[in-house]
Amino acid sequence: MNTSLGCPFSCHYCCINSVFGQPRARYWSLEKVLSWLDLLADKGVRNIRFDDELFILSPKRVERFCDMVIERNRDLNFWVYARPDTVPTSLLKKMKKAGVNWICLGIESGNKAVRDDVNKKIKGDIKSVVRAMQQQDIFVLGNYMFGLPEDTLETMEDTLRLAMDLNCEFSNFYTVMALPGSRLYDLASQQTGGLPENWNAFSQLSRDTQPMSTTHLAPAKVLEFRDEAFYRYLENDQYQRMVRARFGEKTLAHIQGMLDVKIERELTA
Image (cartoon, rainbow, N blue to C red; front, side, top):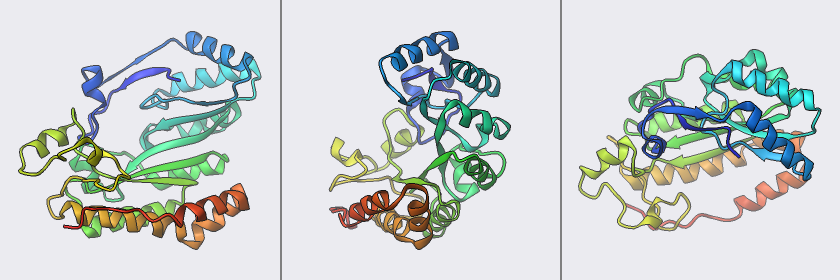
C-alpha cells in the first residue's frame, strides 16, 4: 500500500517524476492511512510493504505514524523505502517498536563522484546509517546500480566493495537502464544505438538485457560486471555466515539454490 505519491528528488536515472509531473511528494493523511491498516489488520493481514518512493522522508510524520501504530498495539510487520540521508536514526528504536523490520535503501553507487553526476547527492555517511539500523535489529536491503554515466570498472568495483562491507541482509544489483521519462533516456535517445530496440531489453534478467553504455564502458562490459558481482556478493563467506545466523539454514539453502541458476545473456559486445 501507499501513504504518499511522488518524490521530491530528481535523480537522473529515475522516471517517477514523469508520472507525477514534477519533483514533489503528496500525502494521504495519517488518519486515513491508519484506517486502512485497521481494516487490513482486522482481516488478518500482518505483513505490509509500503510502496512510497520515500516512506522515510519527514521525521515528524514518521514519528507520528509510529506513535499511532504503537497505540493500536497491532502485531504488524512493515517494509519501507528510504534514502540513506532521509533516515532519522534517532527514531529507529521507535520504528522497530512500531513494526518496521525492513528498510530498503537506495544507495546506488559506492563512488561519490558517480552518484553526484546523476544528482544522487547523499549527505552523511552511508555506513553509519546502515549500522544504526542493524543495531536496532532492522533488516536492510541495499539497492545498487552498475553502469551510471561516469562508471568505470574501478568505480563499479567501489560499489561492490561498499555492498560487501555493508553486508546488508539482502542486496539488489541493477544495471542502469535508460527508462522512458528519465534524464538518462533523453541522453541515450541522442546516441546511435543508445536505446534498446524492444521492451524485453529493459528487463534486468532477460536474455537480451541491454543496459546503457557509460562514458567509459560498453553495455556488454557493464552487464558482465553486474552478473559477476551478483555471484561474488552472495557467495562470499561473510554474507553467508550472516544469513545463517539471522535467518537460518533454510534461507541459506534457498540462496545457494538460486546461485545454481546461471543467468543467460546474449549481449557480448
